[in-house]
Image 1 (cartoon, rainbow, N blue to C red):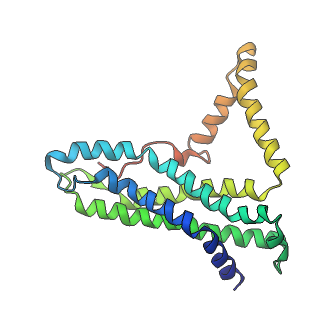
Image 2 (cartoon, rainbow, N blue to C red):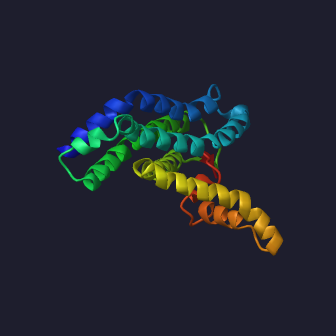
Length: 216
């Protein structure tokens, strides 16, 4: 009952921004396919556009995560967390329920993307050897959105001093580490960190690589 109440409140706060990003996400494959739903000689330009549009999927996933996570905590920050303190549950339980409610909302754009990619997949005539992967693209988008949402949610829920300290440490690492590494003749630690984060099995590896709706 408490979860349903929190989910309803979060939906009321976020329904219009969430609707906007959902429509934008669903439009990515539809706009890329646009009038080339006939296959044949137009297939190559279609594949090129879909490959180019693949760059937008990880960006859109980050935007979805940011819209939901930041939107969940924005009213609390405006009201100095009065709403959170008024809840008849411990703060940790309230944060967990709010996180779970956000997960439900994050999946809305992913579901819209699944429907849009299925529409493109069943409409375009593919030659032998080429297959559509609407489920894979949509699942990857959902997971990327959850990763982005979880990271931003944790930062939004934390104390602003902690967040500022983390950001400052990262900025210092990016600015100072290359010069220190060059003087010491060692590998740039910032480059190593990025490689660990964005290369498998790093937590952000899901954002890297190709996002292809049609492939062999």
